Image (cartoon, rainbow, N blue to C red; front, side):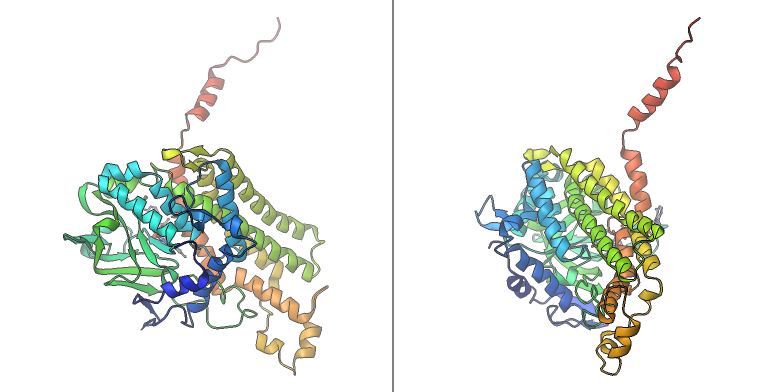
Length: 488
Ligand SMILES: Cc1cc2nc3c(=O)[nH]c(=O)nc-3n(C[C@H](O)[C@H](O)[C@H](O)COP(=O)(O)OP(=O)(O)OC[C@H]3O[C@@H](n4cnc5c(N)ncnc54)[C@H](O)[C@@H]3O)c2cc1C
């Protein structure tokens, strides 16, 4: 089956998955009042890839079936392929204003990256290389939508996850059968799970366990609708309001879930790593798998910063502050962020190199730096929107008031902007509120701080793993060099 349309994707979600929200089991995620509009926005992304004017930008010919498949699945063979993939990612990100952290391209790039490193999986066990390559092909050819989960529930971070609540919390292997592994316990935080076809369970790189035969060392994937798998959602930020009232929440609720496994059977052919903790702990450090994922999400972050710049610029113009020097300084800060992200992406592509099997990856060091940059910058961008908007972000009547015949004169007179009518100013400022103040906005800040791991430990790990010798040598060279001698 080639690249899917939205309708085919929605059809695929009609199964007996266990999605729990507000104490209820969801009957149909495509129609649920809390989840359905977000799910349908993902469907719109699938439609976008097959629009006649975009199909060449969004798809390529599958190396196995010859059919058109999504470009985020591509195994890049050149810098040109990386640029094509990035342009595809940009198109999906522009459509979603960078607010879908987990559009399917994120895991498409990561699963392709796994398949591009077969030796790594084969070294754990030869069958695992075949398993991951077959799986990546299935994801590409069926255009599946994936969620993933890496982390043990918080419970008590002062003890090892193996020992949380007597060892009964973190996901672990509780049995082996002829058919596969039996899994019990829980993992966080499966973003986009209700809208996904499959759950990819990867080892957390930062949580090192030890030993061979470790029941907590594994990587695998299973359908969302697997017996014994329950997904427990947070409350939804789509509370059914109009797109005028909640411009982002009504469109881009991607949902975060705890995945609970209750004697879940993982078939052997879906096991990618198992038992040897060495391979699990190092999978993202010793391969370029995560590099491909970073190429996706740094591109998304670049678009997100551009979107915030667009919102902030329109706000400043709307209320006549765009000529103030200190406002321009704030807007320039957002511009700097957007252009820095662009520079990271372009540098990572310019310094790309072929990896195992001749599959090209962008420069890892550049993308690791970009990964550390955004969690510090995004909260500041949101703060700037708050500073620009001031009372305008609290003074935003809902659509019902805007449309009320009794209030129409008040709305146009007292809510107008410098060069914009009252209704249009409220529409714009409600969007700014959803970027900077609403519960949707708060979750976006939290997401950018943490979705790619703990910022503090990421920066520290990058420093520890980076070769500092050229820098220390430069210092030592200077210390041992005699200053120029003055003429006698
Ligand atoms: C909105 C959102 C969506 C997410 N989506 C996904 C997803 O789809 N898939 C997925 O796998 N994960 C997802 N994550 C989870 C993400 O991977 C984790 O949040 C991240 O790895 C940090 O782990 P934690 O949240 O358990 O924080 P914790 O490890 O519990 O840390 C909490 C605080 O304690 C500090 N701390 C804890 N332990 C230590 C330590 N040993 N040393 C120093 N400081 C410590 C941290 O610095 C932090 O400030 C998501 C997170 C968020 C917020």
